[in-house]
Image (cartoon, rainbow, N blue to C red; front, side, top):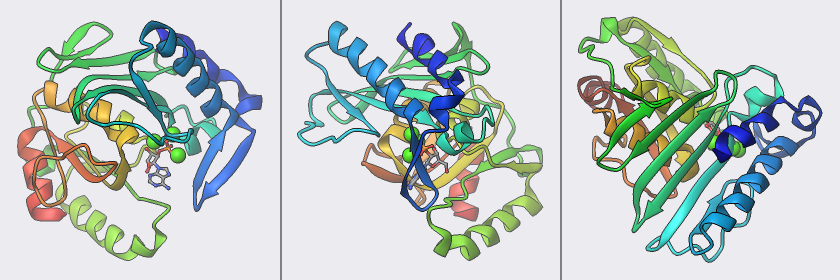
Length: 247
Ligand code: 2AM
Ligand code: CA
Ligand code: CA
Ligand code: CA
């Protein structure tokens, strides 16, 4: 599988140290570019008619009504720079604005999460489902701190405090895609973050839904595949509670 091969590139600490700054707390490394190039080249050979959208390239002239691969070559780049071992590759296939395939690969744990529209979600080939917890006090919730929106720190941290007092505990991973994968397999009951880009959430959104969970936006509506979205995911009950009571 191309993702497993590309995941080996995460081990190159020299490339991970070649860092450019794109904005506040927003980085790209030589690993991001190497993973993107490897996957783009292999997809273009196997699927020459499918468009390719990816975080670290120019994406003009993408026709969202056709088929398009949506790649985040490294989700969790800050973690990669710190050698924190909490990053992944996220790849989705979209058609007509719908996600039809979702794949998230964690090269540190060698875990491959895969979902096909209508076909369920799998972790290394085994079927996965969301957690059955229905109460906040038994729920582990991943938060998104949105470090590139420091002007929102006060309202974010007030929300985190309210939630922290009610839930079992909170977590902050730094990888939106891994958080969604972990909701899909029941390790987390819920996750939310503002301003996610399509390459952060497309694969994870299908994984959570095909595992029996929900993915909403902050208004409580079904999350759509806009380029940017505020995302709340979880098993259906915890997702509904998060959207209605906290966000
Ligand atoms: P990245 O590592 O691919 O950049 C962490 O909060 C999540 O937000 C990660 O999935 C991270 O993806 C993403 N992220 C990083 N910088 C961002 C930015 N400037 N705007 C929105 N999301 C960002
Ligand atoms: Ca980024
Ligand atoms: Ca990302
Ligand atoms: Ca990225």
